[in-house]
Image (cartoon, rainbow over all chains, first blue to last red; front, top):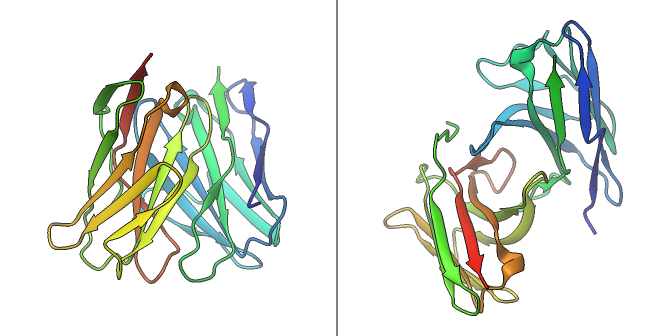
Length: 116
Length: 112
């Protein structure tokens, strides 16, 4: 149980392109989803917290207009990297939780984004 | 805040030995702790969790110990196998869950 699917797993595109990443909870309803960014050999850095039906809460230093998050249903959240540039290249990972007390986050397998 | 490091600590063990991975957490108000395993190119995988009202919790081949006095968490893996090779992260949360703060991670390498 508690499977989170992330798509696509890898994206290579030209500078200036907007890229959408999907995160789905397959066998549970996720009231809260999180988006992380991870650089090689480093820990996960939280970008934003997304609750179904409301606006995402962004961490300090994360541009909300650059990283658009939509959480339209209890099983789907999307992250759109708008007008991506080479410095946006990274490993993006989503997680989901039911939102109850003492419930762990369950993670997708990440999206490797490479901007040329 | 987030934990960012340039070099992952590494632990190398022989197959069959026990492994102990340590983590110092930052917030004395944290009440929920989780260990994750991350294999190369994949997302973190849940291993085991523990609440702050406990000192020890056991799973299959894994044990988590929590010392709130010194804000220390450890993960013990019994009879370590090559498939255990990965990066292990501890994570802390307060208010019974929600937002996680990740540790810097430890890379475990198991020699056959």
